[in-house]
Image (cartoon, rainbow, N blue to C red; front, top):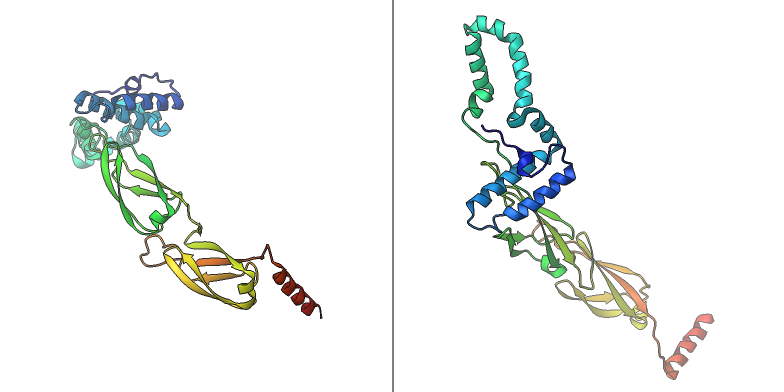
Length: 297
């Protein structure tokens, strides 16, 4: 296999820093990207070479091996170790099995899969394609039910099913939907991060929803019935007499759907805030004074 100078491909010297490698790769990848050069085979080949060079040089361990072993960097360290063992054992093994030193060496290399096999056959190292990252913005109501969306990533349309209950900041991986693999290597993966905007009156914490309800003073004292909004409809609630400010009530199963658990929901927790009446008329003031007197006895 011919030697490939990864530094030359990226236009760098051997002393290049990690930052310089990253900068050079990004610049060249944009220039030769298939979306920028449609139906250009030369650009496509150059893009693959750039990715291959970056895969090796951006990884500190791979770069050390490449600098030491050159084109044999993937197998060089293991081959060197095996070759050292071979030298110590060649004489004994050759007598036991009737091989000459040359025959034994050829046999060993073919079994090892090193220069005697893959390199002579001209095989190139395989590299996984580049991973892609995307951000998807949705409303809270959008993730209350499962839905399908079509995303365009690197010029390709991907149909994505978004399960109900996805959380803000959650990242999901779609295997094989990243950049193309090099030399038959696997494709990269696509990572999607969800940014969920809550423009509702509900506060979401995990699978539970929280809602504040204003309760008038008279209903809080005497009790009664009110209608409140849930995320998917309205419900009637019975208010107990002498309900206190900040009292809470839990509506089981009226919260947010649990991710990848169809038909299972969290709870809705309602907090009552008692509203003190204002702008009282003379009659109302007189009634409150009478109540005050009665309470003082």
